[in-house]
Amino acid sequence: MNGWQAIRQLAYLIRSRVWTGTSAKVFGRVLLASRVDDDEDLGLGNLPLCILRLGSARSDPEFGEEPDLLSHDAIARLIVAVEADPTGEGSLVGSNYGLSLVTSAGAGLLQVEREFFLAARRLQDVDGVRCFVKATSAAETQRVQGSAAVIALREYRLEMLVGTEPFYHPGTRLAATAPGGGQAALTWTLPPDRFDRYRVVLRRAAGATPPTSITGGTGITLSGNLATSVTDTPGVGAFSYALFATYDETTATPDSDDQVSASDTVTITAT
Image (cartoon, rainbow, N blue to C red):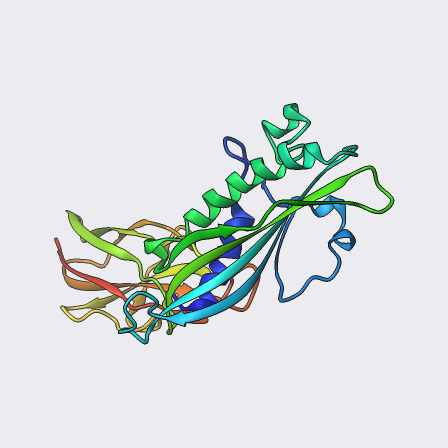
């Protein structure tokens, strides 16, 4: 991944993070922003809030020998508030422990940041990125105008080791067996969960040369966009299959084949 993909993937992982042991999302809102002037205008209903922005970047910070390796800084600001919390204690350490056991409502900054760390930790080698929390600021509090709440906020500096070119993960471990009856049973492993992952496409061609594009050969109908297996009936003979992963970088809910990964292929003789 490059820096553009990495910061979007980080935001995706934070948005997707659920409170440990539950299905409730941790953050009311996650923003990619270069500037937010007034946190109070963001609304208590959107909290906890995470604001991400890019910091500086350096080429191969350890050895200075790989110009295609960049260390990108990302700055994350977490903002938390607890209702009816005039002293700010609840916004730091939590106050409504009944709710904070099952959702982020009532949780303090130090409880929410644990979930943030767990989300950021998922941005690792499987994505083509290494992400580390390198430093944090002091925790600050400020009163919300017209409310009994006090917000707590803290900034975190993350270092992301990325490439300079975009990368699109392929599906892997495409395998096929011939159970008989002119059938081919195929399985594969999906590419990692990404902000832009859309679907996998399986294509078939007769002989030993697999299709080279998502329109080549014959398309195999799958059970869904992210299926992991299928039983095809090509008939008796040698057939080659190619698995492609496709990505959509332009819509909030991916729904088109904007980018196509390299393929994984397999050849089988059906009996």
